[in-house]
Length: 291
Length: 312
Image (cartoon, rainbow over all chains, first blue to last red; front, side, top):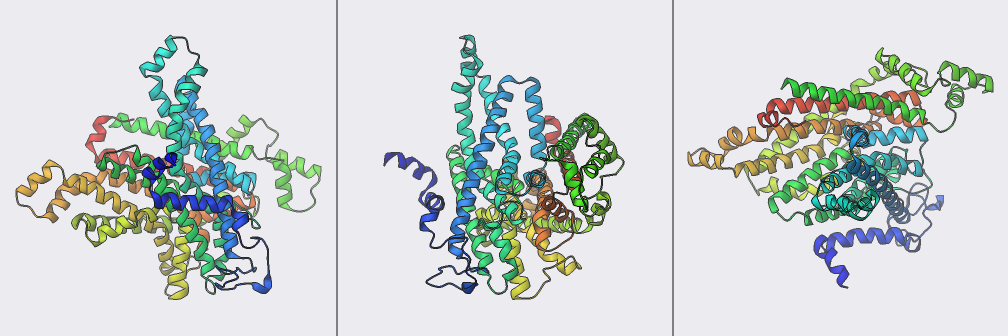
């Protein structure tokens, strides 16, 4: 189990366990889930905690625990696909801009400036509004809104690396741009992007929940925490647990992601004072991005 | 100073142009026939003839560049088009809905300011005291808790359980309290952390030791010597918070049934009200770009170091 030691040392047991348990629930959701999350049973509506329904049932008699598990699945699949999409597109744009420079760099960076000056939720909301609310469109919209971050990050890393002697020597030796980019620049950028992506996952989980909460993301039969919470709001007086449970699940997941991202980022920066400032800067940036 | 100001203003203008192109293109990218959608929303029998008439009316057959400049001309004259759903003018609707959003942003900023400065100063005054430790303990929760969950909990505790405050509608100052807390609490907590860390760092600088050796009390050193040093950072964060609070209005206004601009935007997205979406996106983008510009300039005025560095 040697390969397992490094992640534990960097991240620590509790955080790793927290994130992994959510991943486990999401992957094996259909197996561990006690009921069908979409199965309605009006005879069993609004049940409190009981041995049959551990976390009770909602206004349509659906099992809350099963729906929470299905929500974990929806959220994590969404987060993964958005990160893959935004990361790939952002890295391509950023590498091209950083390596070739010139007007391409100018255009990409101006677009990034725009992406940074307008909070991502606005951009995502407008895109969903145009294409119509659905799970797929929400993922597309959030991916578009998140591209500038990865493009700028990659561009910075690539531009810094491209002026280093070893890249210049490669060029002198006659290596093609494709070879330099794919063999030497992308691997450097990928490391940075992955570190950043681990910190971004929590934000994306929040963004998905925000859009679904507004009725612009995941659509009703499919379970999602933000949408579960909003549909439980009318019953907040009789059954506050229907509101609290999905909110709590989301909060815990995001705490897990944030701790994970913070630890991974801090592992790259060993100075204690700089560490505190770094983590604070990330927190502030993060809150500006989320809503 | 003048040169930097001009420089910043020009790049802000470029950003605004990009924002206008983006707001335009996103609607032009609409999948399907816009004319048919508009005709359908107007109700009645939708024939090819009606669709054609709508297309001519909205200039949908013109080249894209021409349409962009035409639209831009209209926007410059304050004509943002009219809502597809209700038919009312978008600029009138925006003006009508400005008040709740303004209250939310100002009230939220006030909460942020009060929470941030009081907790931050208390934390720096008594390092490792109760307040300091509490702020740090909740640090992770701050960014992790969704706004709508916080708002729902506020509604449950103060509205449903204690029946203290109204939780529905924009009706007088009492109904303003919960939404403003919901948007301002988290940025406030973050601001306090920022002040705390900034002050801690400043308090370890040599000139503070000099002040201590002169025999000044901790309170005097903190307020008179250390505090001015973190003003630039404080202003930058606070400016960012304004954008952030405005963004929260998208979530918070619908929860508390406020008829603000944020709720208008969300409504437009739900009903595919293209002109409203376009105008809201453009207006918010311009607002954020201008706020960023203003914050940059104010920080430069407050911080001589930045002025000299000529960071562009």
